[in-house]
Image (cartoon, rainbow, N blue to C red; front, side):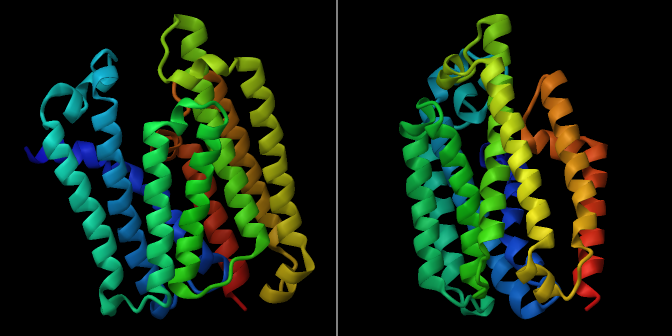
Length: 295
């Protein structure tokens, strides 16, 4: 019974919640325990909230998943977990998520604001599972909004003011990753006629390629403008942040290459398996850290 529970909670997807730590990283507070504690609590909160949503998604998609060659192995679809048990797990996850916020040991600066963001995230994703994921374009923008909410949650928990640059870049990057993943669905539909998700029939490969290239270009330009903007250079007392653009560009190009040639554009799978992108992320993190934390 333990393995099906782990499968339905999808802990491998929790890596997405690392976006919560971005406000600390870009504000130079990542090494300070007083900021790390509330950020880590927010990370745990989001992990349980997301797992609750995954439970609901598997419950609602159980019939369709049984007809899918891979998704039929999911706990609800395979019968390893009953729907009633799935709902119980969902409620436990949501309850645990909000309970973490109330614990005083985390020293969360704005628990009510954080609870409101988590609540909105849950409501938005319930709407996504029930209806929004079946509406083309809206489904992708809903996913991107979820990443911005993670960012906002990290800022509220630590009282770090988010810059316009970071909000814009995270939203655009999330759009880029979501469109790249949907491209894979469109490819499967055009090649095999298999409708992985309902919106796949509304996306064509030429359209997806144009949108992905457009967003990738905007992301790159925004990042470069961020690194050379007067307020950023003044805050970090350095003009060398633009050097980190090399690793961002390399990672974007590699991701485009993978989504164009491989059979999966899943951001999580690519992040966990592709060594080139992992090296780019590590190199970007080290270089950015050395530049901003040396002052």
